[in-house]
Amino acid sequence: MDKKAKRKEGLFAVVSPGMEGICARELLRLKAEEVRPVPGGVEFSGDSDVLYRSNLWLRSAGRILVRMAKMRCTDFPELYRKTVRLPWGRFMRPSTPVRVRAVSRRSRLVHTGRIAETVAEAIRHSLGSSADQAGGGEQLVLIRFEEDNALLSVDSSGELLHRRGYREDVGRAPLRETLAAGVLGLLDWDGSAPLMDPMCGSGTFLIEAALMAGGMAPGARRSFAFMQWPGFRPGRWEILLAEGAGESRLHVPLWGADRHPGAIRAACANAARAGVETMVTFRNEAIGKMHRPVFGPGLILCNPPYGERLGGGSDLVPLYAELGHAWRTRFSGWRCAFLCTDTRLADATGLSPVPIAELDNGGIRVLLFRANL
Ligand SMILES: C[S@@+](CC[C@H](N)C(=O)[O-])C[C@H]1O[C@@H](n2cnc3c(N)ncnc32)[C@H](O)[C@@H]1O
Picture 1 (cartoon, protein in one colour):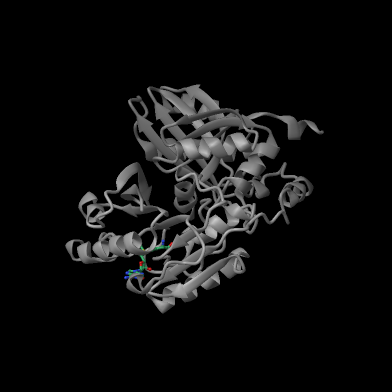
Picture 2: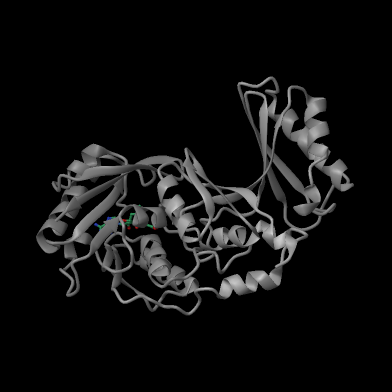
């Protein structure tokens, strides 16, 4: 193996709050080393194979960063001097447009705009590029100051990892793919029990479940920022892409319903783009019309409307009561779980649901509730 492939890097998977443990579990399965969950993400290390695999396979992470340097800086000339010396040529070409995002806490350098400009200027100088770069995709660089210590990282993902490339039809209040996959992990759903989402919208829970149960990589249909790096090895990527391909392991029913015909059309189109259309069945049906399925018991999981995005709030009490009644009367023996922002609405199901995790759905704080039927 060549030297480039063997270099071990400090890496960081960014996750939304509540997903740290699930992501750490995923990383251990990918044979990442020094896996350590911290608030907001998971630190780990590995060579370029681990970096490629984590982008390709992690289901719960938002992006993967390469830790580039930790350095103490108390003034701008020092920040410039130390930044210009770093090996930027590993991640960028002189023509690559650079975007720097800066955060500062309890540090002498507080002006984040000026920190970002200084870093961008040092990178351009180091690469010998001009200010008006315009070649290929933009490279994101992050700098975080904490008590005068700067942590510099390079983003390896590009577009956030929840953008798997299958969801063009988003429905009315979609769920992030990374959150859907993380919730399945939190519920210990491993593909061996039937799964049903009676308010499936654009189908995110079921499509993520099908990808998981089918052993399919969530990132197989998209590109990543690291593919533009000068040292990217396309041949190695092709080999890693082929790992696990064709090992379809699904043998359980995955079933979704929604009362809106448009949502079902979107869910079917999304499932087809994800390559899982034969694994999931979608039906245009309202909660009140649901029948006990012939299969099961299994897990029934959904995110009902919770007011913030779809409007309303207290008017949703009858919907939650109907949901609880339908599940209690037709799904005895099943496990159920749902996402909801409001404990009062959750209690309206009459299922005595217990909150098991506090999560974030695109900036909205949501609780994951669980109950046995
Ligand atoms: C928050 S969205 C679900 C989003 C979905 N998880 C996704 O990934 O796109 C709630 C869904 O519940 C559906 N819904 C609302 N009332 C319903 C009912 N009585 N029966 C079935 N579906 C219903 C809505 O049409 C909407 O698609």
